[in-house]
Amino acid sequence: MTLPSTLDTVDRVEQEAERFASHAGFSEDDVSNIAMAVREATVNAVIHGNNYSRDKDVTAAFETNDNDLVIRIADQGQGFNEQNIPDPLSPENILRGSGRGVFLMRAFMDEVHFRNLSPGTELTLVKHRIPAQNAA
Amino acid sequence: MSIKVSTRQVDGVTILDLSGRITLGEGAVTLRDTIRDLVAKGDKNILLNLGDVSYIDSSGIGELVSAYTSVKNAGGELKLLNLTKKVKDLLQITKLYTVFDVRDDETHAVGSFTR
Image 1 (cartoon, rainbow over the protein chains, first blue to last red):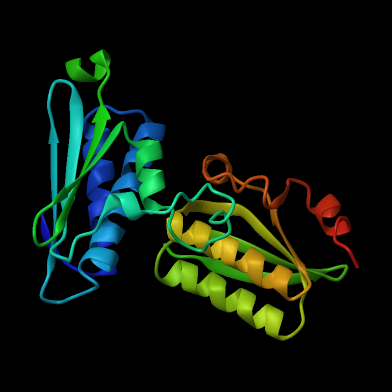
Image 2 (tube, each protein chain N blue to C red):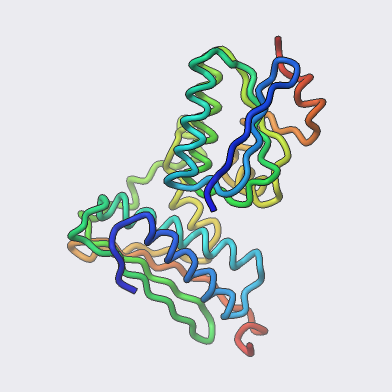
């Protein structure tokens, strides 16, 4: 999916993630968590990556293999260093009004990877499948 | 569906009955504007009833934190009522569950405010 940098894109990618994860056989809770992680990744792409630019797109790719559900969200922004993301659980950050998106992605997915596309950033979100889901 | 807010007064406490989704965009802005208006007119005891809130994303969590901080800075209290399991889990994961005063009984919640 290649989509404009809008809030409608956030909702659309979230809904697609929900549909895809459900079809892959994940539990209701997992589907909800996967959809939220994807929503947060797409919010980052639209806002922090592309800064709502009409000239920059967000791409979303969904796939499953025998072991994993893999979702990739990419923007065309300036890129960022994940090492600079503040810890939202630290006392000095706990009452901040923002900065929890990547934390929630990591909480809900088994793997979260960042890749610098120069320009842009690609987030890869991975959720492991259990054997019963592989047979589904 | 975005958020819907209805306001009522019970024994000096302003109760906001919220329903829908508190997410980036309209939902979070609606909550922010509502809290800002209440604080501006001097309402300092605010109880957010989240019983019908089906979903909150990180922006929504941020708005809850900002609401808590702005009410506290104005000398008031903001408490949460009737969290769904999903919202409760989110607040626990983000370690905010112990920051907020979370209640599950409206009468007791109203009685717990300092007047």
